[in-house]
Image 1 (cartoon, rainbow, N blue to C red):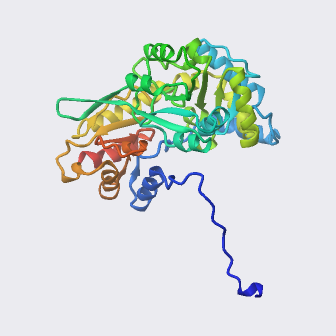
Image 2 (cartoon, rainbow, N blue to C red):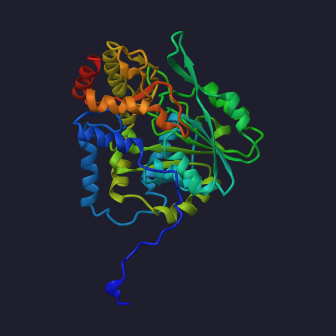
Image 3 (cartoon, one colour):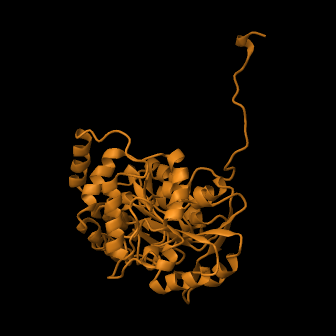
Length: 402
């Protein structure tokens, strides 16, 4: 048989992530583009970052900071992060052995999990949860144990708020639990952990060997005069935690994919073993530009007021609709219950309602049910208000017509 008679074929192999398909975020964004809808689904700004930050990065490129930086990140940026954490939360990480620059928060999450979770280890997550958590655990060979936030309902049966499921967490933690993943401020609900919550968590884990992964990428988006309570502010929790944060979220540059992980030296040593063969290192000129920009604390200290103004503007507009607004003490997401709308579509499941809202009303949102492994319908969807005022105004006009 000649080579011309052979039909080329690609060998098949077992999928490492057989249950993973196209994410709801990709689906809804594509639908929004197709129908020219306003995309309040995916969580990224539609406004530019500070031009001064761009100038700094451009300057670093022209200064020939374009080759590999140190594997753990350039010293100036790690020192800046160390100082920021110490100033805000009172914990002094060692910049050389306890802080690593990552290719965004998601890489920090995956690498932390791969560093500490072995096949068969259990990892507890709290749903609704960011969609990268489960696949990252599966790639490590771990077993995901999910507990759900407790939905608090009003007299009409609508979701009013969410509580931490302490009883379920206590039952889920056992000698096989390698890692507990927490997220505050919380995506998608906007819920924020309080100091008393950290104290209770410390008590729950005190006599265990369970580690913590604390996803704090929205740390600078806490409103109404409240403060973010980081695991770094709690010495007992800091001693067993990977802390994840993101410059992309903080400085409106999500496409740059630069973040960091802070953790005690023994955890960081294991993190580095994976990191060096995962991404090795992170974009050089952006690290230098961010290091310079980070030295001016007002850039992140003023962020709560900036986003609170957007939250309040969007909230005021939504209050003229039949949507029930859930509290938004943190993040740049506003969750609403749509089940009281006086339209037949109010009876639809969340995913179908969001598709209808996108195609027929012209506003894209994300169903909160997409943040659960098993179908969990609560009639709640998520809007992102990290948008220009004109974008929000146009979206509100369409939503107020319902």
